[in-house]
Length: 398
Ligand code: GLV
Ligand code: MN
Ligand code: MN
Image 1 (cartoon, rainbow, N blue to C red):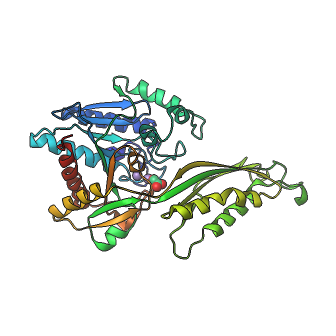
Image 2: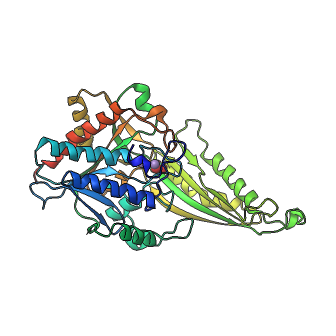
């Protein structure tokens, strides 16, 4: 609730964009908490944020846990933040126990998971794991034309004393706790989800270019109305992705019209396309149909389609899934295995080290919404399972 004050909205949610003043203040709060329990805080060239509890053999690769502090523009209090705070709770519990793990334990907040300020998201984790280059990420611009490089310079000015660590440092294992963002655990009254993997996702940006002119005087045959072409494309894409089994997920969440004036024919439309499917094969087919379909519905306008991110379905290793399962059983917590329909930074960490995820239920499965909520008992249950798995792995010798 303290972190939710940084970027609090009037309707009880959170708007904390990556590298914004609110994100920086949330980090400042966490730096204070970290120092309060004798842990160090540091960053890296991508604006990822780490808190470290040093183990007895600091030269060994650490166990890493966390998630993200950035939010959607009308986001909730738990998406991402829960994983960061559950990780911090693990550090506090280790401190309270008076024990010292062999490996260091680190909590991370990855930069720009949501991708609502800089698209596409999961920037910090993708860059850390080497799936995207630093140069490419630094040049991405937000809607106000500020680049990631400029936003990172502001972060450095705001937190000048934060040391920086190289990217791609070795990690022993990464475990991310997160609210489920879907209603399965709540419906089954189970506090713990053992995440088997993450469904695939392809995202695109379509730019439709027409021509601005007078709404009253321009005859229809001379119009190049970018909005009419764009809506035709959206409807065709919706038809392409229509799935009576409800496995395909298709969303146009961003739609910008220029000049956006009632009496001017729209000259330009930019819109986002987000397609997800648990079958990588199906996702390839659907994604590959986007450009031809948009071109076929361009009418008198031009269309450009850029693919922003391509992520196939993945499975986490069985070793870490069974560790999470055994921990939940040992603690007497009801659990089940399930696939994540939402994207997470764990996707990229999975290419870097042994990775897994723990889900807890959230109210009605609602997320990316200001009403997002979870019970204290479930939040605590997830943190306890996380603590068990992190502690065991932090004492795993090479
Ligand atoms: C992550 O927030 C996603 O969109 O899945
Ligand atoms: Mn999230
Ligand atoms: Mn999210």
